[in-house]
Amino acid sequence: MLHRRQLLGSLGTAALLSVGLRNTAISADNASDPVAELSTRLNPSIQAARDTALQILKPSPAELDRGLRLHSESIVFDSYGFSPRAAVDGDAIAAAIEAGASHDQVKDMKEEMSMTRYVSDPVEQQEYRDAWRASGVTCVFQNAGEEGQDPLRLMRRLSRFTYATDLMRGFVSKAAVPADVETAKREGRHCLYLTGNGVPLRQQWESIPDELRYMQVFYHLGIRMMHLTYQRRNMIGDGCGEKSDAGLSDFGHAAIAEMNRLGIIPDCAHSGWKTSLEAAQSSSRPMVASHSTCGAIYPHIRSKPDEVIEAIVDTGGYIGICCIPRYLRGSGDITALLDHIDYAVKKFGPDAVAIGTDVSYNSQNAGRESAKLPRMSKQHPPFRSLWPADDYKTLPAAARSIAWTNWPLFTVGLVQRGHSDDVIRKIIGGNVMRVINASMT
Image 1 (tube, one colour):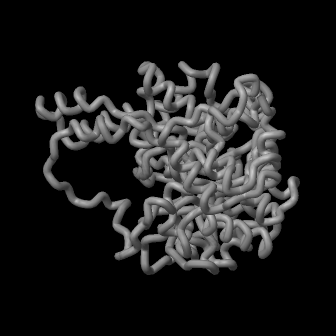
Image 2 (tube, rainbow, N blue to C red):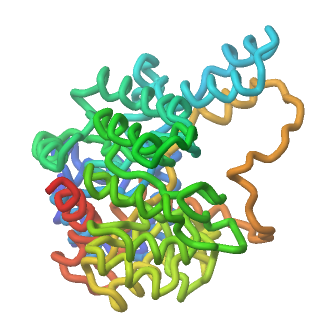
Image 3 (tube, rainbow, N blue to C red):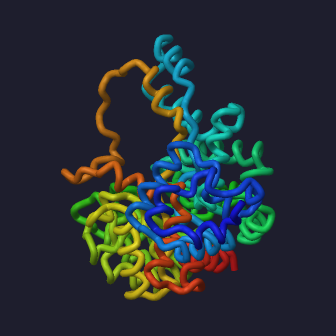
């Protein structure tokens, strides 16, 4: 049988795309090869996404070989995202609804199952492991906090990822310090660095120190990054969905100072532009927009204009480019993702850019299980989701091309764009490692 390098060298682009790097194309003796692991034994869902992106990129064998090898050798760190999600148990939730479960109870069951069911269910665990393997991702800055400020609300999601990493620590563990990420890479494991979608506040407003004291509790529990705002206005500043964008409050300056003291990275991904700018000017340590886009390419409310990105970069931070077609615009696919990365690298330098996907892999079984659930009564839109009107239609192929499991092809695309290996290593993980190291000192 041909070895992988010989195979790739002998295939033209058209033949390569046709093969799609399927299992049969690579010999069994390559099964332990970390490069081959990125492209073999892919389930139909992962393979379909992979084929879609390959059809768009059309890499040469040499580009594909270099990209996959570089990806397999590097620490790959998603600057904001989600580890693979399990399918829910549709029968169990349907029974709970029949028994009178409230909307909140059903929502909680769905979330808990999607975030933990792979621990105990063998089928879902295989889905989970397959997605991690195909992605080649070492670590995800995992969203482990529900949007808001209430400490109990924030703790609920955090508990789920603590549980999962406790019970699956031989495969995926919680990383508390940068060295844990390096160890996971060296040992062929994966890990989660935890971020919260809000700053925990008691909202008693007796004093500033009293309001901020739960921040240290969450730091001790493993949270290493926090959203300043989420879409809407809070006591720290204005979210990106607020038309006024009044900027950072006096309390917001105090909150950032406490983050800097503890070693928590301030994240303005969901903050308004003025709030983001003033937060960067206030922070004495690196601040980030962990999952955003370049407003100079398309000025979506979730993007950041050049002035804001420059201020973030001046702190030593970065902008993480996300995988949401609505924010990327243009083609909305992997080409658009690479366009935003290219722009940020050329405008602000290679130390300024990461990839924060803001998407997850969902189990192939999710649709089947969700179809078992009876329809529940309509609810008011959640406060956090009050977005400005937007008639953008996401094309399925665009979303598939930037699926989370296509991480290896993000690296291949960067190779095609002419970036050096050193620059690519920074974009796919090195810059996140640099910032988390800086936050700990």
